[in-house]
Image (cartoon, rainbow, N blue to C red):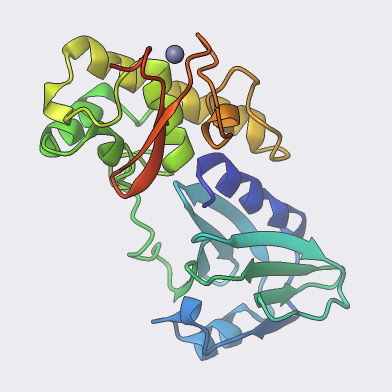
Length: 264
Ligand SMILES: [Zn+2]
């Protein structure tokens, strides 16, 4: 499932279309990912307008078009954005294609856990909830982090890190990376974390978010070799710090890997 840096990577794929008009469109209106969206209005409104800019928040993306048109995309499990030539013919999973003079902006989602939303109006859409601070930005503050952990004190810390209203864009591999870096056991109940552990989780959260954005968002390149991600799925995978064989279990509904030596 795409996490923070992968979402940012896909968002940038359509940058080449900024400043250009949408001339025609292909979409699969009855598909699940258009649920609740007025696809007739989407088609009517976007044809003829220019793509002006885009932004990502956590796992969601917003594309802003001229004449007050807003397109929201969520990549779900398997969503991807890419660019094809102007004579591109959509395949089965290419559910939304915006044609410009020189290119086609393509949204593909084979499993359709993603979502397409549309809004026309001066104000930003209500579904584009901007109250949640972005982890890699200065608005993600310690006080917010502490309050969020306090609100979910009964849950394992791993499960709390996966909650999007607190940790926008953090998914399974990033949560494991954060806890490994902070040396905190993923199954530990949040309210039993020491102040030192909470501080370490806060620091590691910002570090992993910023570094993965910096290193992976430009071209989906791999994180540094000494990160846990390279070992966590490998059978016999070892802790990059001390070579201890990693343990795995389901925590917060997701397969979790940790080092039994570093994370107690
Ligand atoms: Zn270790």
